[in-house]
Length: 569
Image (cartoon, rainbow, N blue to C red; front, side, top):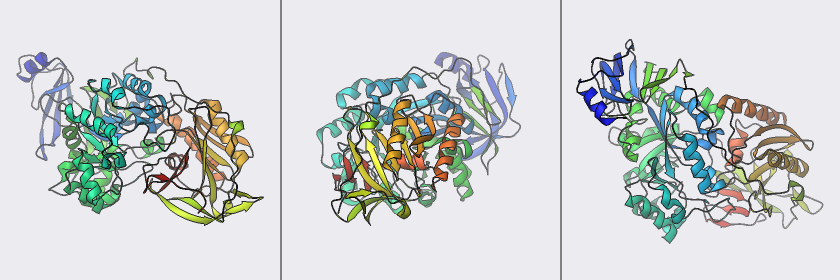
């Protein structure tokens, strides 16, 4: 944006590039809608009135909202590179995201951050980033990198670094760990907000967490938890992802008093949901259908995130703001007609319009240092009762259950008849092939195995199944592809989806990735499974910062106590 030229256009001294007439403009500052025109020059809004322009487009009475903002997202969870993610979400009205690259950072370290910054540069989708605070998420797992304050320091001056990302190590905050506090101090010294990640935290622990400088949280699953955090001064990001669905439970917290401290985010959303439901538009639509005022829902999709992250040129329709516009046919259903990003039309009729020359970006390596044939998966029986990870529908929380062990020939084995499957997490970085082994209930498979190199947050290989031979076959398939997802049965691969970029992302469009997932899910259902998105569920069973019981390559973790626990009780 050339500021001098924009000022001259705003004063009416030179013609604007574009004039959108016949608009019903949604003012997110005062919550009102008024009829008028939008003058655009140099990719920014020059004025909200009619004036000479080189091009005039009549919107014929349609509503115009600012471009939507996703306040917290991991681009890698769409399992495709940034340009393909942009092609998927721009037609849905999302023109800005604040992403945390800690998935690829856990695999590749600073090289992963460099990759994601380069691969998202110059896209019509504005990609700001919150600098990953917890790589690895904990010391309870093996990751591909470790990022301390010194490794993060060079990135603070980057113009697209907007915050310190979710501080998952809340025990480190409460213990006043020096490295954790140094990261927070680095963000605060530069005027950057610090995002939180503290599921279930309340009382004195919450007070200490907020006192350390944490400004937001996206992990609330209950209204009372969110209200306590709001009252303590935090901003709340209401999340509706694929694995964690919190919108319905948290909508009651929104009021005339606090809406300006609440925003929408998706966190992790798989291709199926992006294509069939949408992105932030889906959350706005759901909120309106539940009785939320449409303008209020749009304010929470635009202005609140822009103000929290200090994105002064985004989030509203006003002079000097980036011309990110969502043209809406029907305000009650949030039916989108077209989207403009930086003053350029990028979609019409839900179809993407993208300039030639947009490529997948630079290459990124993968890391796959293990020999599947050498895996030892036998579990000698050491008792009659075992701990079991229990799935919670619609959440990434898990239960900490108990079950009678199925013992055959002195070994604890899976028992598909009781929906008791073996779960393994294999270190893919060190070459040692260290393997954590546990059991899980909820996948419903009566045979076969699934495996994935997407396993939050360290992204070791995770696999679940009822037979050791199938588990090894599924893991071997992932290694052979250099990363990805597999489904195996009878000792052979039945379906697969390659993810060659760090073992996390495909170069293919989102709809092609969805077709690959569809093939995997079809095999999963043939194996007796009943989950709607088994691979998203599987990917979070290795995340030792989400209660209650998780598995890493180093063993079972009781997240409530942040400590390893034995398999046998």
